[in-house]
Image 1: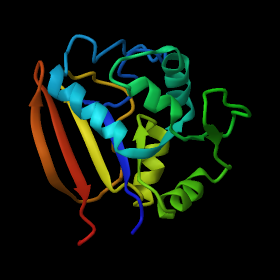
Image 2: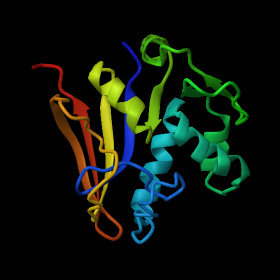
Image 3: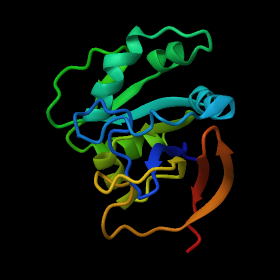
Length: 192
């Protein structure tokens, strides 16, 4: 059985996943900052990371994470785990990646990720990475989406679903977190 490829996203009510913490100079600002996930939300993000064996990023998301996580220390072990996991980067412009255990995928990153998904091992998380995620969704490689829906609309920005994308998903979990954030989890329903 293939590994699950899980897209884990902070998303606005109007479907935007771009630059949730304001590190990508998109002009959207830190749109998640005013809200708190609370202990249950923090626990979910911790368990989600601890249960995977690899991470996949697009270049911009990777650069944002790589600028922060190597310098973080926490008692819960989140930073230690994210720093030790294999990190696969889809980029046509990067030639080197300095964050520990990082590797740049080939020009055909989707095929590389398809092979990675088919290999033995645990689940693979895709953080952010809208452009890459659109390609993975179009190729039906995403098995689950974990969405933290923030009670804000942005009116612009990259959205989770690209124009023309269509797929069915089955709800597996929904919870209210912290200050009105919804955690909604769906598995891909391939019985269409």
